[in-house]
Length: 304
Image 1 (cartoon, rainbow, N blue to C red):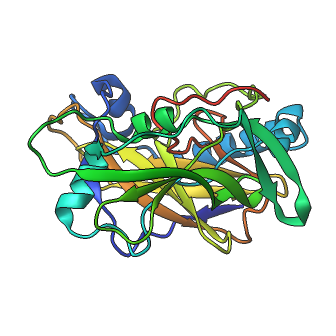
Image 2: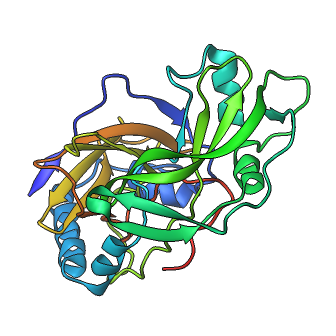
């Protein structure tokens, strides 16, 4: 069945930092040309595509491979307890402005273990402290407010994954002025399996940008959806089966006539589910692939 997404209490819309072409956004919002409102039947088209994706994945080898791997289902970085203090520190984190005071640990062990409930474990390659730090410290802007790292050690963190909550090795970054560390998962995710269905052609809406988080009880997921400048925002529907949850993003209330810019907007949308996600595969109806998550920048999943 299709479940209409619930909107977050504090939604946000930002100009996307990605270079989406006008043609891509036009498919959803009428960007760059006069475009009529979407014809009746848009919901039926998306619902039909969601069913096709679910049917292709449910019981497939790809789904089986997904369930045996390590795939984060939310942020792989956890801020210090209580969050960052003040907008200056928040902007420094968002922009990747970090300064290292001291030495980074050596290479250490070559692998780490992801542990799920019941003692199920999976060995994955360990990301070095240097690569982990570089994925955080992306900016070299001098003279601007920054976060200062005064120490780094290997520890652990709890993380939502496609197989439920797990404990994973993590690099703990001690920040100047903070009593608890910033944590970043220190093991490489598994490489996503090859999807059993191809990308959709000529259907309304745009692919999801990424998964933000899965609720602690698994009864909702929060994603970033894209929409254009000539509509009234994004909406995300969920098609649920015993083996998968397929999310279909579309736009609502497109304006008729007029010209639009070729910039896309990003919107956070929380989707309520009939039952917890569990180990069901979370899929994007447009791409036919698992919904991407915001992993460590510059660090690519590999292996099985």
